[in-house]
Figure 1 (cartoon, rainbow over the protein chains, first blue to last red):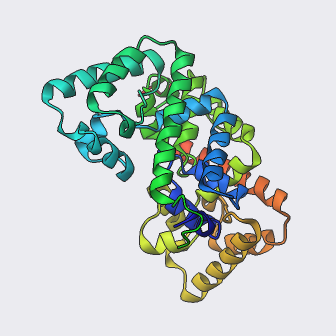
Figure 2: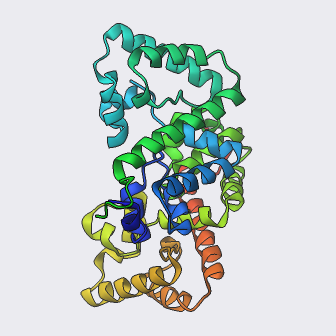
Length: 174
Length: 174
């Protein structure tokens, strides 16, 4: 659908369609419905980003904590959201060797212990090598840097999810 | 479990156990994990309420929009969260007559059209007669009154869900 169609949706249809553009945070989509109509997909994305930016730091950490580990328990047990499953599969995180799975698990645990939230990265903008390297490198950052960095990655994930759901061509009506 | 056990939980276990005390808003539970340790169940509840109160009005509306209709589509189709299903069943909303279902549906639609969020009430503190009466009466309120009233009901629901999950007796350790 395009943005003009998005603007006609009831809050229920809006949340049903777009509720997981920020992982497991339908409240964010549901909140920005109040700001419709949106002039463009970019305006919808900006409204979401504004809402995130206005949250207290604990709320930003809350968003990060709603994200699954990469190549973690939820992937193994099949309990990822559809969006996360597709994103992790696209970069091959579902076909890691047992050595790679162990390394990822160890680094994820270390990261969570250090920061109190999971390592979040936009998988679709990386490959498994850069993800592992980033995870290792970002472990050396401070808490505030990583919280901000994680939120930036959430916004990149959100942008790609939105682009998969809403056509970016205002002339191309549904 | 009791509050001292709650205070030992990782953010993942905290969110897995308490993530739906505010319907479909695990971000709220995930955010208040930052404020542990909690002295008591009341302190945990207060942290959640503080987080909700600090949200912009759009965020409060977002919370309300994450709630299902009472005796609505999600109940008919079996897609309610476990908590909502139990709460709606407890007051008999799953065994309404077709006349009652129709009346509820009509009033719910009217309410959503008027306010842009669903009618939220703590079902367990009411019965189906008072729920229908309140729905009818609250339709006459203004937007700001209803938004605030809805949020107060969210907090009541949250309190009862918390009490079902966390023992209120600090001497009664798990």
